[in-house]
Length: 134
Image (tube, rainbow, N blue to C red; front, side, top):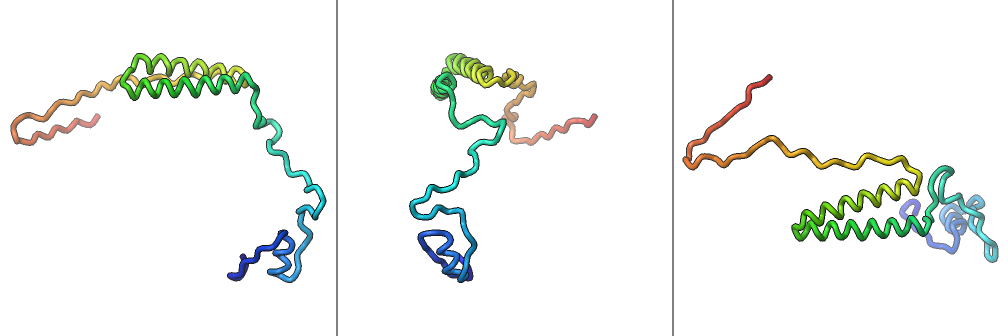
């Protein structure tokens, strides 16, 4: 689209000629030609898009285990949830080892809070407590 004018042609070059009267050569293939090779899909040093059957099996196990952990959590079965969560962490570590990634430290559960909450007094009086600054 240019100057509120849209053009649709079979090739980019034809559309440019229609809009501007001329166009430079483009890299599109001409009829019967094979298009030029595109840039590589991955950069050097980056993993390819294909994975080994071993990794696929580990990812499948991880997906299934996480689904089971989620199911246990939604049912309130925290013991089963914890078991499946720990199993998922072990599978993730296996994936890291298979990929040659240094083992990471698994996340730790947050320590219980030392803060306690109490219900307001039964009377309608309002009490305000402020902490002294250190």
